[in-house]
Image (cartoon, rainbow, N blue to C red; front, side):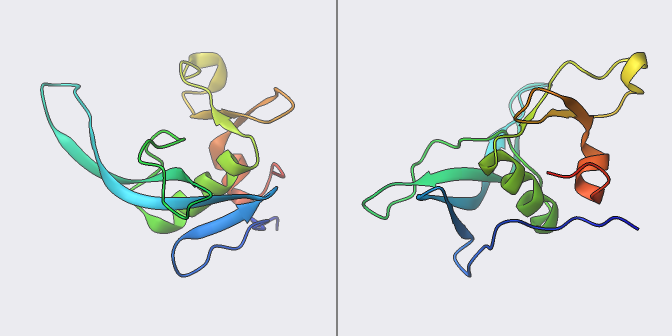
Length: 118
């Protein structure tokens, strides 16, 4: 059975360093705006500046309200993966798709399970 194998280590401050850049997962609210003003909480990926301060603007979309899921999705962002909005279609089986750094699209469930290596 194939399993997710993390390539990054997150410290107790929810930070990881990759290619000499430090990133932080930070849980905060965001506006959903779908049916008027509302806010949800989720983890977002942020860059940590050379000064040690976390940049206030997130690098990522809201990743997840679940820490384990957000950590995996944050790792994908650090490694160059991106969500592919608008790919929910009958041909893709109505599954959330993510684009690998090489441009290939993969169902996120397959990436998170380890079936598709990251």
